[in-house]
Length: 454
Image (cartoon, rainbow, N blue to C red; front, top):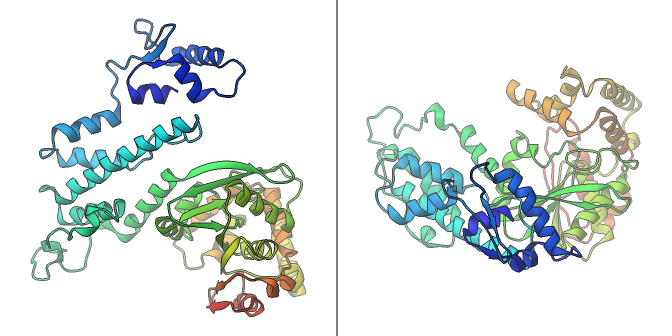
């Protein structure tokens, strides 16, 4: 309600506020009075009450308060040509964030319609700012190239997509004599690694996180980001809805998917933002989590993305619900766990790792977690390995880390492969150190019509 009052900047009838935000309580007017009393304690100053309410109407006095979105709108209206380049960059950074993030579902359908319209206005302003940056005379060639690319990405079907790119600059001219220009060399400040993190940061800010409940009552955190047809990713351990975006393994891929799809992910029970304290940490429970997410989001027909043990979960779900799954993309997965296929020596090694996990996973010493990091990323830099070591510790508890490993060992969907009806693509790394290539090949061979790409 506070955001609504500030953003609209005008008085509202009490009845209107009750309809927007309190259609459920037995006494909406009492709920409004309670909310106003709480807001007064937050925003009122001793000599300046900001919540102004009488028997009919409520409004907030914002005199002397800078409201960033209003400041941006005013600047765009008053200074169409003379805006400073630095000011435009600051506006672009602010408008890249989701307006009033986290307020979806805070009111009734009319509030949601208002919120959608406000966000549409903010997106239009964002496109305008990016357009001005792409053509600004003070922009460097590299900066103009970046802003032009972002401008087109922000409005791919609008005027920006139909207009030609900005004129060629010395940066792209092979005849340039300026060192670093036209030579293919980029300054350290604009390395590919730095550029690749920008889409991930935007995706993290834009994603919506909610919760649903599995059949046994476990709360499952799920997130959506992007637009377009849905793609649901089955959870696999070592995931975290927020921290995944910085991952050197899959962060960039996730950001790319979100550019073309409504990308839906969730943290399975026992890790990430979902319930950690759960009695059942088994394969059937993992499938239940996937079912809960698909049902909660009202997904009728959709493709599934499975990675690692998420492949087996996706296969089982596709067999149970062939009418809902339009396709499977299975990456570095397996149909049977290590308890069923590994040699006695390999099983003994994995049991030893589980014991080490129980005693060392949550410690500050990353040596225990480093066992996993190096198998996931054998060629990673020391910086990326250190990040992944810490990421593992944050995803789950030591006890759950050991329980996950045991549960994965008992996975077996070999008898379900032939029952898959959906078109399937199986992708597997040739040099995967955790899951051998032959296991991916076996998955593809068992699913009718599956395509295998090593």
